Amino acid sequence: MAGAVRAVLFDLDGTLADTPAAITEITLKVLAQYGHTPDTAAVRATVGRPLEQNLARLTGLAPEHPDVRAATAEYGRLFGAHVRSAGPGLLYPGVPAMLEQLRQEGLVLTVATSKVYAAAAAIVKLTGIDQHFAALAGDDTAARGKPHPSMALHLAEVLGLDPSECVVVGDGVPDVEMGLAAGMRVVGVSYGVSTAAELEEAGARTVVDTPAEVVPAVLAGRP
Image (tube, rainbow, N blue to C red; front, side, top):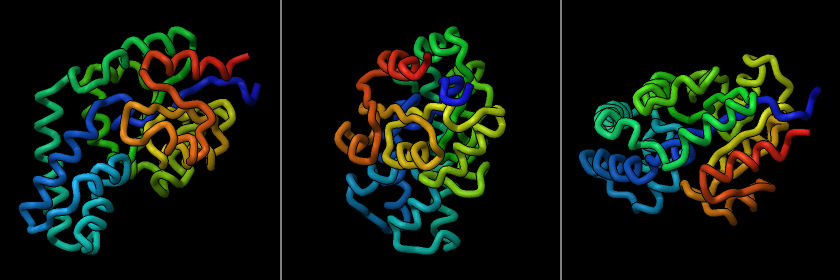
């Protein structure tokens, strides 16, 4: 019945993968190559949003500017090397067990990320958790990216579920805003980019501090 939780939509960076620090470091390194030196906090605050838009915003250039396009490509090269080097170690401790528990409970798991599909799929595979997910949506999958509900609604449609049967789990304000706008329940995680206070202010009624706590928080929405 509508309303009983049947699926979980996971954000990737800062929720499943411990990548915010690497994303920040690589972004700063790439931008410095093009003469831009934004504040570290400003860069970290962009984690969880589309890369090309972030680079454009941080440089003050248009997304189609050659420097932004070149920086995007260089970032992809450096971040890809980081992911390949880290492998399963890229995941937060407890994430594989958490995913396994949720699947054993009969829930369908998906990924909803601001990364482009190919990059997200590569991370999920290289970290060894691809077998847990029935579907994946990236910034180039839906009509509009986070915080617009398009991505979440797309995944619900793919699964043949009502939005009220889905829970969004994420560490960023855009995750919370996307889930609520889609009519889904939201579980915020405070171990990524945003603080518990920021997630609650955005509208998350449940915020947890570890991957292990995600399981009971999600299952609390079952009859």
